[in-house]
Image 1 (cartoon, rainbow, N blue to C red):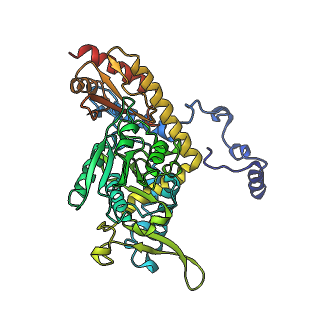
Image 2: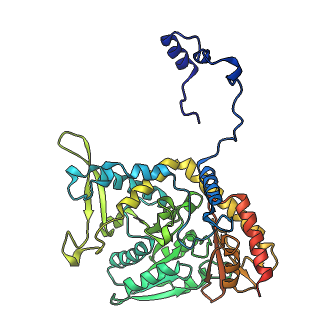
Image 3: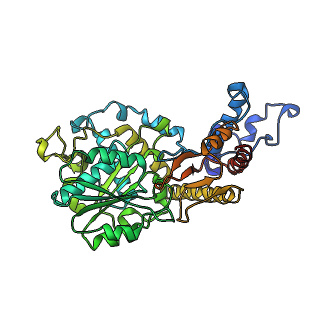
Length: 457
C-alpha cells in the first residue's frame, strides 16, 4: 500500500497549483549524473506478520540468542494461543477516551467505556451465535462455572445432576468443581470420550434423565477435537436438558457452525486469542452469551443502548444483577467487574480483521495445522491417536518419553507443544498452529521432532 495514495487527477491538480507540469519536474535541479532514474533494488514488501518475524530474526543476530536459533518458535496452545496482534491495537488502547473513563456507573462521564462494552457484547453475540451477551467474565473457565450455576437457577435448583464431558479443558473442569463444591443438592458426573477423541454420545444418552440440569462440553475440546455439538443438543432436547459449550480458541468459530446455530442454550469461551498475546497464561477475557429467554439470569453486567432527552444515542448499564447492586439472595453472581481493557482490545482486533479477515486467518490456521499433522503422522514412532476433525490444535503420541522429547526440541529452539494426558491416562503432546507459523517453521519442527526421537531413549 502506498503511503500517499493520491490519484493521477489529484497529482495533476497539485502540480497545476504550483506551476509544474509533473512530479518529475520538481527534481530537474538535480544533475543527471547523480540522479537516479530506476527504482531502488529493494526486497518486496512484507505483510505485518512476516515483517515482525523478520525483525525478530534480525534482532537475534545481535547475540541475544547465543546459539543463533530463533527461540520464539512456539507451538504451545492448551487454551491460550499466540495469534498476531497488530501494534495498532495497543496504540488505540492508549486513547484517553478509553483509559481515563473507568467506571461505567456514571453514564454521563463514561460513554466511551459503555459504548466499547456494548460493541464487545455485539461481537460476542455474533461470534457465539446467540442473541444476548454480557460485558465479559474474568476468563473462559469462570464463564463455564457461571453458566453451570445459571442453568441450575433456570431449572429452579430442582435438577441436581450436572454432566461434564471429560473433553472439557482440565482448568475449566477444576474451576467448575470449585464453584459447585459448596452447592447443595448438586452432583457432578463425567461423560467419557470415545476412541475418536470426542464425547461418547452413547454414554451421554444413558446418563440423561429428568434429574439432569445441564451438559457441558468443549467446542473444540482440550484435545483439539471438534465435538458433534448438534448431535449432543438433539439428545439433550429430548430430556429438556440445557447444553453449554466452552470454546477456548475463538478463531475456530470462523469456520465451525456457531454454538447457537447448533442449538446450545449458553455458550462461553475465552477471547484472549483475539485480544492479547498469551502473556505467560493470562489475563484473558471470558465470553458469555445465551438465549433471550435467559436474559435475567445472566451473570455480571450488561450494557444497553438508549436515548437521552435530546434524542441522541447513549449507553447505560441495563442489567447489573450482582451483589454490589441488589440483595445478595437475588444476585446472579458475585462477579464484581468485567475485563474491560482486554474486552476493548478484542473489539479493536475483530474490527480490524472484519468478517473476511477473520475467516481468512482461521483458514490459514487450519491449513497449516493439517500440514503439520500430516507430516508428523508420517514420522517413525509418532502417531495421531484420534480421528475426529481438528482446527488448529491436535494431539500426537510418541514411542519415546515426552519430557525428554520436548527437552531435546527446546535445545533446537522449539517449544514443541504441551505435554499432557488423555482422560484415560495416555501421554499426549498437544501442538497448536497459528497464522504466525511459516511453512519453514512447520518443516523445521518436523525435522526437530524426528531428530529428538532418534536421540531419545
